[in-house]
Length: 191
Image (cartoon, rainbow, N blue to C red; front, side, top):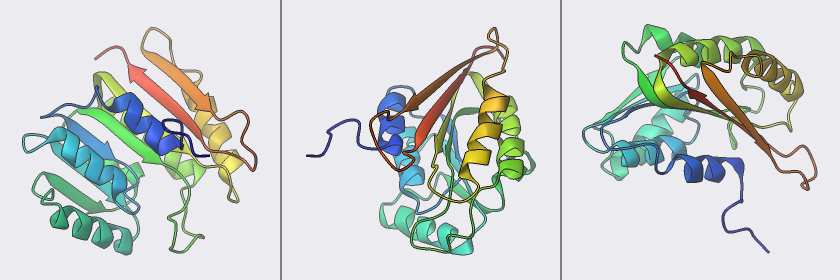
C-alpha cells in the first residue's frame, strides 16, 4: 500500500513548502533534472515571480524547457547550463527558497552526479543568497557511489551553523531499507 503524504522526500519537500513559496517569490532549482521541481516552483511563484534553474546536463535543460513550454510556464524561468556551485555568477538577487535534489538524473548517465566539493560550494552560496526566513531544501539520495561522503560533508557544514542565524531540520525514513533518501531543511533567521 502506498502512503498518501510521506511518499518520498521530494513530495515531502513540496508539502512543507506549499504555504511558504508564494506568488512573486524568487526561487532556485539548483538541480533541474527532469524539471518536475522547476515546474512546481514556476506554478507557485506565478507570473510575477522568478525561477532560476541549474543543471550541468544539456539534456536536462532541454527536457525542462520543453516541459515548461508545454505548460505555458517558461516566461518567468531562466534555465542555466552550469553547475550549481556557480549560482552566484548568474543570480544578483536574494531567493525565498532554494531546492536541491542530489545524486544522478534517472534515465540518463548515472556517472554524472552531484559531488561533495561542488555541492558544498553551492550550499555555502545558497546560504548567502537566501532572504531572511528563506528555506533551503536538500533531498539527499544515498544509493549511489559517493553519496554517503556527500551526505557527511553536507551535515558537517549545516549541522554546525550558528543557531541564532539558521534553523536546521533533518528528516529521514526510519523503517525503509536500502539507503532511503533524507531531507534537510534550513531556514535563514537573519538578513
